Each structure stands twice: as C-alpha cells, then as structure tokens.
Length: 59
Image 1 (cartoon, one colour):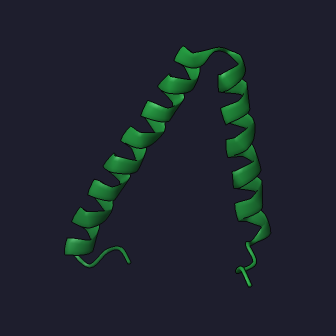
Image 2 (image 1 turned 180 degrees about the horizontal axis):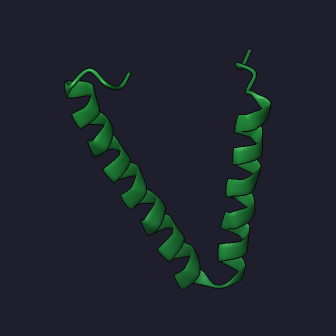
C-alpha cells in the first residue's frame, strides 16, 4: 500500500505537471530548457543542503 501524500504536495505536483505540459506545448526547446533548469536547481539545492548539514543546520 502506498503512502498517502499531503494536500500541499498534491498541489505542488499538479502545478509541476501543468508547467511541464505548458512547456511541452511551446516546443522541444522550451521543454528541454525547463528540464535543464530543474536539474541545475536540484544540484545547487543539494550542494547547499550538504553545506548546511556539515554545520548541523539542516536535516
């Protein structure tokens, strides 16, 4: 049985899907740009989190 998601996370998920569809409708270049941007944000967020964890300021 899968874990139930919170209402807030469902809203964020729906917004993410909507934005993916909108980018895809604008063409492959727009969709690729969005995917690259999300990957860069994920990497920089992970780097920031690792620095904060080293100081004991993040989980």
